[in-house]
View 1 (cartoon, rainbow, N blue to C red):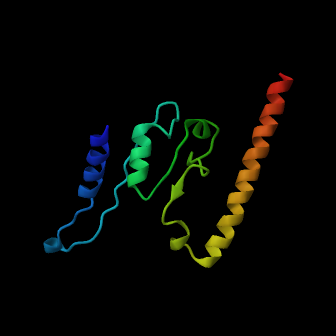
View 2 (tube, helix red, strand yellow):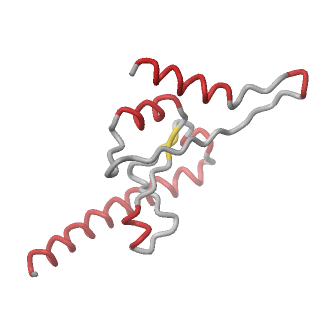
View 3 (spheres, rainbow, N blue to C red):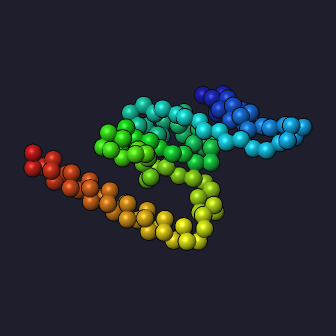
Length: 118
């Protein structure tokens, strides 16, 4: 298992190593990890998460509920985050995150009530 971290980090580092002789620059690597039963805390997902600058977590149930993209904004994060946002964007996005979290909580309670009635 220790070798897996080394293999992942070498693979991701290699994907972005551009030669100065050929103009240098940078390359964005987007590793895609499929989780088993949505278990993001399993060994491989946490290993890749620890190496990358963030993750976008997609969920099939959100997709089938009609949400496109089917991104779980509660789990999806960026280490760059606010450093790449303007002040206006930070102000708006902070409120949106709270509104979305409140909505999801109310949605879960509403579903619970429906399940209890059935």
